[in-house]
Image (cartoon, rainbow, N blue to C red; front, side, top):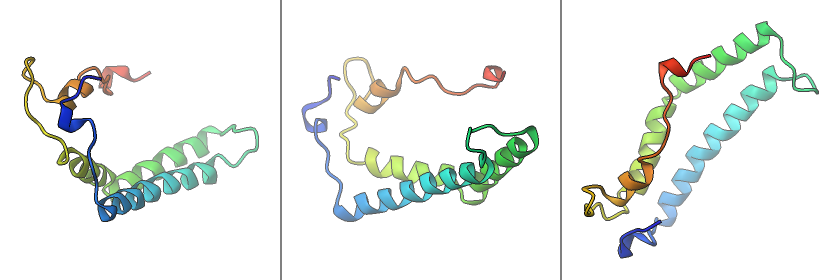
Length: 110
């Protein structure tokens, strides 16, 4: 990846890093525990009823705990450390790195 020189390394304060780790840990372990609760069969199988409950509980967790806002805050904390100077392509380093991400779309539903 071809980054601006001052973007090759960024620094977070210890407090910023700890706050990010706390948030990530909360989300990761909570989602793991939700999955373990509903996927309680040793072979990893789940019946349709438990699958629906798992989906409902996961959605409820994401919505009630404002997970998207929390993730946006983490993204903001990291993003503010970058020099957002535009390159010859009129994009900053972050935009350039993210431009090929394939995002979810409604027509991706199976």
